[in-house]
Length: 129
Image 1 (cartoon, rainbow, N blue to C red):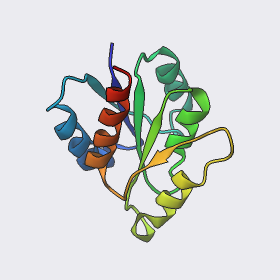
Image 2: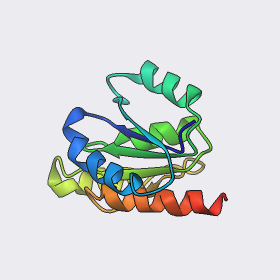
Image 3: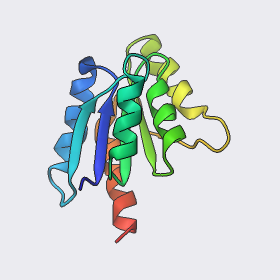
């Protein structure tokens, strides 16, 4: 059983994932780290979300930043989006994550702020105890 599933759209996002891992390693909460693109690996993403027992998802994505919204469309569990500064200083990714359609909520932290995503996940998990 894992408490937090960290999913990044590309291996190039690992610096941001490492920041989230660094925070979570100091807690009692378990986590896993996956590299699954919503665009390149949609079937793998579907299978992961369907089989995961994670209580919270952290989705790290740049450019169109579809990953957090796709995950949120497949689960009722909290999804925290981390926009990546791949282009346009990360504003494109930030706006993509913040502008989800009704019924598909995604929380967003600051651009490249994997540590804050982990801190938010911890607060959510602490509420469940």
